[in-house]
Length: 67
Image (cartoon, rainbow, N blue to C red; front, side, top):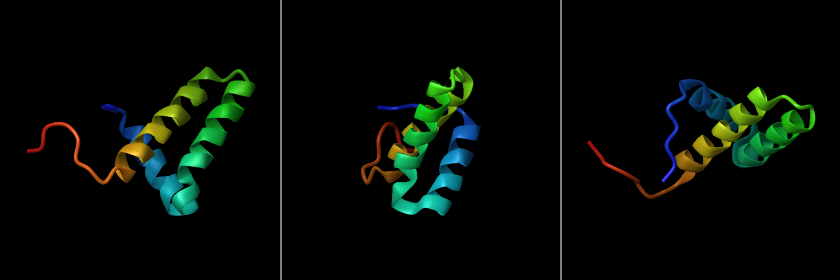
């Protein structure tokens, strides 16, 4: 189970999903790879977190504790 506490990752995921639709995960991965290639580890990890959030939001099953 993935856990993301970073609100910025959820905002980034929302932005990519609105703009890219089903290609949002691929776009997050491309941005992470581009950042990694440029040596920007801060943006690399940001886009990786955004990708994990996109995966979480697209999962049809509820995971973890529900309240």
